[in-house]
Image (spheres, rainbow, N blue to C red):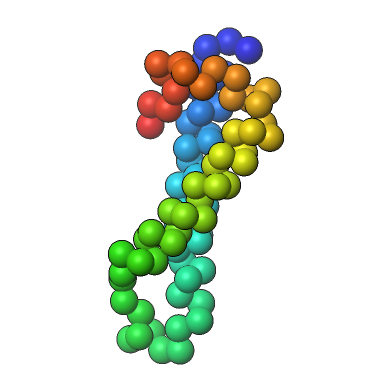
Length: 78
């Protein structure tokens, strides 16, 4: 796998995590009864981060072939 493909796979990985974070954050508001009961809180951001972090670790473990060079200096240049 050439260097360009490595950069693209890390960018894709980062984009997937950002999208997953946004979806998980939005899902936390599904149990809100009224729109005026929606408020932003640090707790919800923290919980979304806690959900995305293990997912990222699991993805790196299970997709070793795509992310071989974890110590690369040009990992994710978004």
